Amino acid sequence: MPLSKPANAHSPVLSHFSLKGKVAAVTGGARGIGVEVVRAFAEAGATVGLIYTSSKDAHDTAAKISEETGSVVKAYRSDVRDKATITDTINEIAKEFGRLDICVANAGIAEHFDSLEYTEDAWRKMMAINFDGAMFTAQAAGNIFKRQGSGDASMIFTASVSASLINIPQKQAPYNASKAAVVHLAKGLAVEWTEFARVNCISPGYIATDMINELPKEWANKWHELVPGGRFADAAELKGAYVFLASNASSYMTGADLIIDGGYSLV
Picture 1: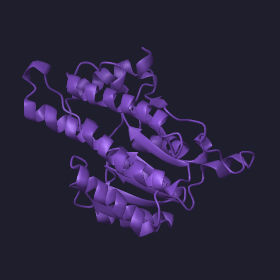
Picture 2 (picture 1 turned 135 degrees about the vertical axis):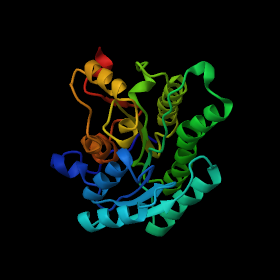
Picture 3 (picture 1 turned 30 degrees about the vertical axis):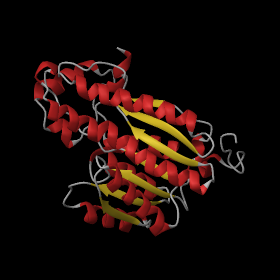
Picture 4 (picture 1 turned 90 degrees about the vertical axis):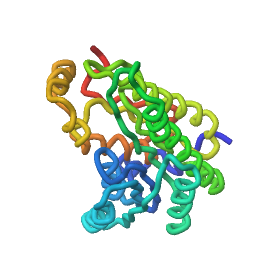
């Protein structure tokens, strides 16, 4: 079975970006990039399951986005590190709303330590969240996509520009490795899943989130020097890219890694 094609590829272009009638699940959806993805999907008309692990205000956030957009947004607590737990959560979203069309594996952490001092526990935690969690989330969604058989589902991974370059001055080899693994995982799934879903990555550069604000100021100053764009991105500036990959606007795009970094990877 070939990659799904929109019913009317010649319809007005903006109609291709609509997510009306779609159901989406987003891990790490309560803050940072994730909450902007949830907002973007709701603004485009989708029903959204906001999946979080520890955010105290996740349910309030979901309710606020729902009120502002008119779309149904509901928060679900889960843990991507545990396959059974995240599978149950993804299945619950699909059961409650009747289907699942879009899934974003966005949950992740970053740590900065000398590789020679990185402990076994720290390594396992990094991989469990960033890589294992991405795989377990994708497996849960992929099985639903395959059962539905519509062919136009979309799996999106949040990777990082760190998957394809080495950032300085911070030391973060395990993080870089985890994100490189995610990009290659997505490419493998893209080839395997052509009958029932498209699979793509978004690799952000430096985004102005709480994660960056907690790091040494001298690092941020160095990054500003290295980014041709001269600034960090607001997480909301990624909304269009996620909607693009989730929608029919990218119907022939699978296995891609969209690097959105203000030109950082070019220098």
